[in-house]
Length: 142
Image (cartoon, rainbow, N blue to C red; front, side):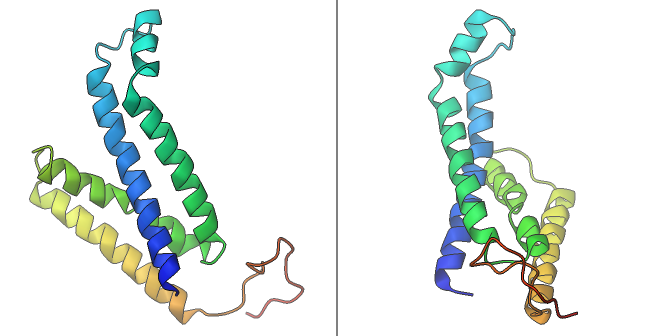
């Protein structure tokens, strides 16, 4: 794969991670949750709220551009590595707990994504959809 693909993937991971972290900060800064007009005003005037929206829009466009050049299964799995990055950020920056069980879970997630990426390289059969076209190809090799 081209280096630009890896940069796109890192951008996707960054935007997804920052969006999740933004939820933490926006939630803390808009407490208490009261489901009334003053609370809604606090949420809508919170900069983290708009940062979250921006992160998810940018993550969406990053994912859409990456999925054109990758198999859906491995790319979908890899796009969820923010579970690991958010866990590490919360431990390293926010001082939240990080247990051995959580570390094992993170290792399993990363291992699963690596295995899926390896199987993508092995199965280099043509796909049903040409990545440069919006129409399905006429033949499929099994």
